[in-house]
Image 1 (cartoon, rainbow, N blue to C red):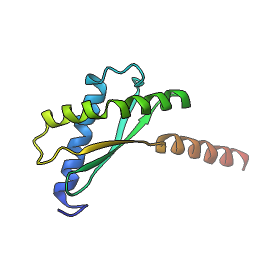
Image 2: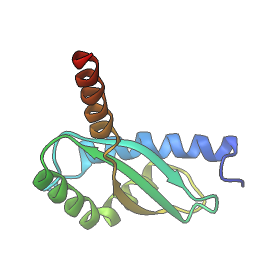
Image 3: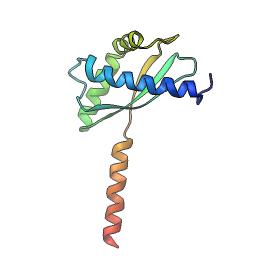
Image 4: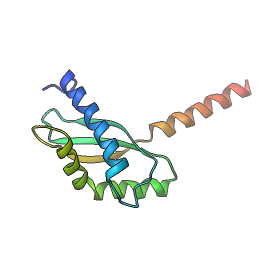
Length: 118
């Protein structure tokens, strides 16, 4: 299976949907911030590994605690994912902090500031 095949794109979106639900409903770790969103998922073509890109609404301390909690509960999340999806292999989960929303907001503010000056 190629990296950007239709099948891989469908698997990525399905894993993203399920992981969003698992983080929101099943993970009970108090370190995980309630405003945690799964932004994207990249599953390798052999279905052995998955990068879960998450965004956390909050300060740096909340982000750090959330990432710590997600890394500690990765095996439980993988077990939940295996029960929800019928995949040949259940991928090992790696959580990555995604700051793209904050970057976009910061850039929009800068653009507005430049437009006000002119």
